[in-house]
Structures are given as C-alpha cells and as structure tokens.
Length: 482
Image (cartoon, rainbow, N blue to C red; front, side):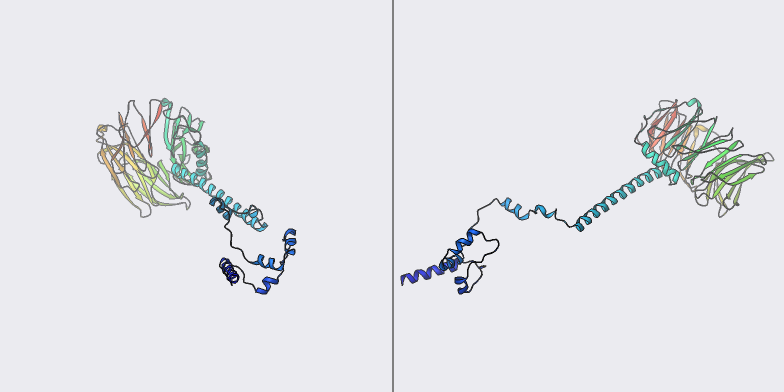
C-alpha cells in the first residue's frame, strides 16, 4: 500500500511540473513510439536511443521541469533581440537596389534645381535692388555685380580729380564719375567696376534702371553703358542737345538739325532707330521715355515777340502719332519725366506742371515770386525743389513732391542750400557746414557735420555720398549727429 501511495504521489508531482504548452499524446504512442531520426540528429544521439529499453525511452519522453537559463546582461539580450542580421542589407534584390538608386538621383536632382533657383533669386534680388527692374542686360550686370562683391574695393574716402570733375550720378547703387577725360563706375565699397578714356570735354549723363547715356553738348558722340561695360556708342552726326535713357533699354538723342531747328531720334533696345521727329521753329530742351517703351515726351523752347515760351509734346512713336500738346507761355521747360502710365511731370523756371496726356488736362504749380534755386528729380518722378523768395537764397524753402505731383512736405531752410538730392525714401540738402536728411513726412532723420567744404551730395537709401576736396566720403543717411 505504501509503495502504491508513493507511486501515486510521484505521478501527481510529475503532472504538476508538466508545462501547459506540452503536446498531449496517446499513452500507447508515448510507450511504443520509437525516437524519430531526422537529418539533424547526431550519430551519438541515434546510438544512445537504440541502446535504451522501452521503459527508459518512456522516461525520456516525460517532460522534465523547465530549467532557468543562465542570467545574462540585459543590455546584451536587448541587442540580440533587436540586432539585424549582417546579411539583411546585402541580400537586396536588384529591383530594390534600382529603386534606392533612383530615389537618390531624384534627391540629388532636386537639390541641384533648388540651388540654381536660390542663385537666380539672389541675382534677381541684387538686380531689383540695384537697378529697379529685370531685363536681360540688367540680369547680366547683376551676375557680374554678384561676383564683384567677392573682391570689394579699398573703401571710402575715394580720391578724385575735383578740378576736372564733369558729372557724378548714382547708377543703381553705384557711382558714375566723369572727370579729366576718364569715366569710372565704382560700387558701394569703392571698387571700380568700369573705367575707360574718352574724348568728351563736358560730360553730361541721364540714368535710368541701372544704365546711363553719357554725352557732350559740344560734340556729337555718345555712349550707353551699364555698371560693368559700354553697351553701345555712336556719332549722332550733329551736336547733341539732350539725351534720355529709357527703362526698357531704349534711349533718345536730341541734336541740332540741318533741315530744322532741332530733331530727336529714338533707338530701341537693339540700338536701331525707330522714331524721328524734327522741330522746325523751336529748340528741344528736354526729352523722356515712358516706362512701357512706347511713348516719348519732348519739351521745346522758343521766343516770339521778345517773350519766351515752351511747348510739351507727347508722341506714340510706335504709332508715329501725336498724343497731346501743352503750351507754357512765359516759362522755359528744362526737365520732363514720365511718372505714370499717362502722367508726365514737366519742370520749368517758373512752374511745375503735372499733365495727363490721355485726358489732355494739366495742373500747373506756380513758383510765384520765388526763383528756382536748386532741383532734383529721381527716376520715378519724386521731385525736390529749393525756392528762393524774391531771389534771396539765404531764406531758401524746400518743397518735395511725390511722383503724382502731391506735396509731401515743405521746410524753411534759413540758409543757402548748395545742393539737393532725393530718392524714394529720403531727401537730403547740403548746406555750408552740414547735410540734413528728411523722410517723406519731413522729419529729420540724419544730420552730418562737415569739417571741409563740399560741392555736391548723392543719396542711395541708407548711404549718403559727399563730394568735395578731391574725394568722395560715404556716410550713413540715417542717424544722430555724425
């Protein structure tokens, strides 16, 4: 009895120790089944099993309690669980390798396109900033300007021969200087981007959209240039009276005439003449080209019965017809500028006139008893006038008008104004010992004290250039007393 109880207890213990996942077998199969031999069964195992009795085999098939595996480093175990077999990246199919290679080419191509686009935006930004518009000539000049920034100049002050200085103008953000038979263009770091000799004795210039036309009233030759090169030069055949540069790259040259008093010829951007007008009785005093490159404004001055008079004519040279005529008795027009699609501002010695050639209407702003002492008109038509009441320059008055002819502000200067200049944001005046800069509301934004005499000033946004004493000095436009 005792032996039977022991045997029953042993069986109970063995049943409790058997894991749940063990496979249930038929009792007969467990006792009689011979061990299975597979290709992976070792010879030692086969010989051991063949030498065993059925009872021993039965005991072998009883599942033994699970043994706890040896403790390993947890980090090592995690690495083993998450590691990727070495062959995982190598055993790629040709199709997957092709897709991966194709995606790399796509990314590379996208990066190249993006890089080109960024460079183009940079060049376009420089072009717009410096020239105010994008044309083929200006983009080419913008590219050259971009590369020139990597080799800046020696900085300011910049030495010049002031005794022979003919003209100095802003050419975009650069300076156009003509002196002593030599014409130069320098950038904002005083680096020379263009330099050439010429035979002109009294240089005059008209600037628009990053290009300039230079000429001499005592000769017939003229040149069209950008900041980095001469684009065109020609002999007009007669002494030049005035010339104008257009936004589209076209230009106009007015000369004396063999068959009339004067004549004007318009050249397109390809430098071919497209329009000529001859004035039988008056002398051409000013010309301007419209922004769309289709129209020209021509002012003429004449005398009749001992009285001076002026006329303003607007032509559509692509249609060869007159759009409008305006008369100004008793006044001499000296400057004209297109400031809108149908608007022209004309400046005379006694008035400023804003005309609409579509409606054939004009608005004249008389200077009254004041004399025009100094003036400047920027490329877009903003106009700064210095008027002297009854000719008294010591009591000058500054008046600044928008491109539409509206008064922006006026100020009493209380001493003579030697020079005035303006851009879209600021107006600066040069006086004996100082330069003052005002915003479009008439608020004082900058004050520069001068230790030496100055002859002229130019403004380009945040930079002001003072010319005098055989040198050009660069200052900040805005700021406290400098």
